[in-house]
Amino acid sequence: MDHPVINPDVGLSPIEGGYIAYDSTADRLHELNAMGALIAELCDGRRSVEEIRALAGPLMPEGQTAGIDGWIRDAIEAGLLVWGDGAADLPHELTSGELNDLAAHLRESGRTETAFQCLKRVTELTPENPDAWHALGFAAQAGILKPGQKTRRFARF
Image: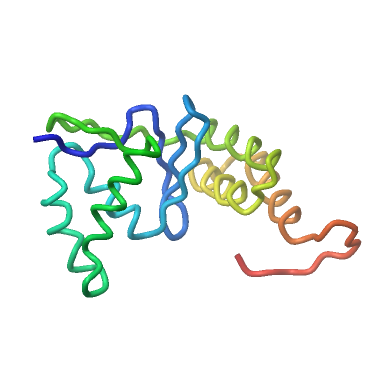
């Protein structure tokens, strides 16, 4: 029986509240909330959809376990997951360099909040890197300041 597994072209990185999953081959970003991150972790190639549903189902609102099947089906269609043969490979975790490049790409496309999350993860991976902290501060300022605004205001992330 086929088992869902993270696409080998997809790199994962934990962020606050879930995961960022980036397929560099297709240049596609997936932002997973906590439940999506859990289901993705369960899709390690060793479990069937039925086993994943049994494990994650009790965490779903009553009557919503069919959403797990739908999530897996949508993730397959989007290229986040592929069908595996039961052999498990650990998904590739995005490096600080890959996250930095992704953040630049996201900033260019106007996705400043997700770029900020990537840069925040870079500082977690390389806390001694002053350039990473500078980039994070710049991203925070870019996300806080509105176009044409001359003074800074503080916001919670």
